Amino acid sequence: MTRLEGTRVLVTGGAGFIGSHLVDALLQQGPADVVVVDDLATGSRENLAGALRDPRVRLVERDARDLDVMDDLLGATDVVFHLACLGVRHSLHDPRENHEVNATMTLELLESARRAGIRRFVHVSSSEVYGSAQYAPMDEGHPTFPETVYGAAKLAGEAYARAAFRTHGFPVSVVRPFNAYGLRSHFEGDSGEVLPRTIVRVLAGEPPLIYGDGEQSRDFTHVTDTARGIIAVAESDDAIGRTLNVGSGADVTINDLARIVLSVAGATGLSPIHLEPRPGDVRRLLADSTAMRRLTGFSPRVAFADGVRELFEGMRDGGLPPEAMLAQVEERNWVQEGVPRA
Image 1 (cartoon, rainbow, N blue to C red):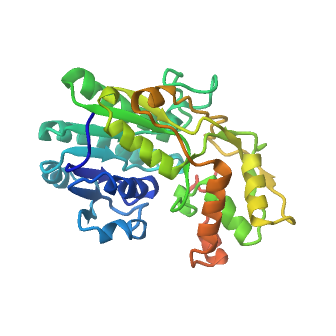
Image 2: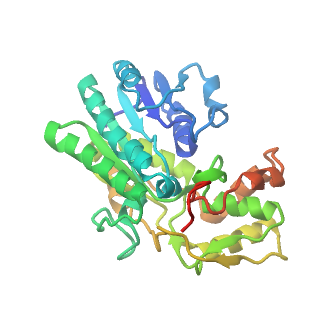
């Protein structure tokens, strides 16, 4: 068992949605220090507002592709959590950069970490590597047929991580989180996700938008559960060299998601509007986390309806008017201004 108490921890992408919750959870494990590397392209200082009050936490505002910076930081690190990435919708309008960040950067960081003698390296991948479910629930042996460059690049990063273990015995684990949601999740730009975008629209008095028939489903996992799962993998010696799902074990359709948000909001006068399907949209994701539970003892704690209510109330009471949030939502967030639309 690898305990994090007293260790020097580095988190790439630690100012992002999952990353910042991971930093919060890490501080409860008693590390000596936590260095966050984030260029704030999709993350923010606000996400780390609480953590940065802890003297053990330091934010380095740099791109994790800067190998000179990373080599210096890794020389004073015991454990690495690698979360820095660019997301699904970004990959549809800029596939090359998406691959460079999600795959090439992972390879280079693994090599740097191996040279530095890092004690544990946890590579945070994505359930998007699977593509749509061919059977459900999906265990780690499920075929990997990603629908997007994002999924393909994350799969390449996984392969590099597993190769580092098999070739060199480097102590790396791969985590595949399913759809994390919760406070600090993105509603804006090409990082915007379906649940917070739906909440923003309903708060602004607008109907939810659903792409396609709405029967596509996701395994929505509360972000605090996701963060606990990632830490559990780092602390389990049995997880070294393994690839493990982190999910709730239940899926929710987008139609049901919209109904739950409308119910929480008490918005009886609104009904969802269905639009054409989005490109690269996975049909179904549902995690089998049996291996994760067996190796680490992890199990999720937050029910979806409870998590939706928490997020709705947090966004409602967060100080930003609904109209201001709605202005930041890009509903067709898989295209870029000036680029022909499919």
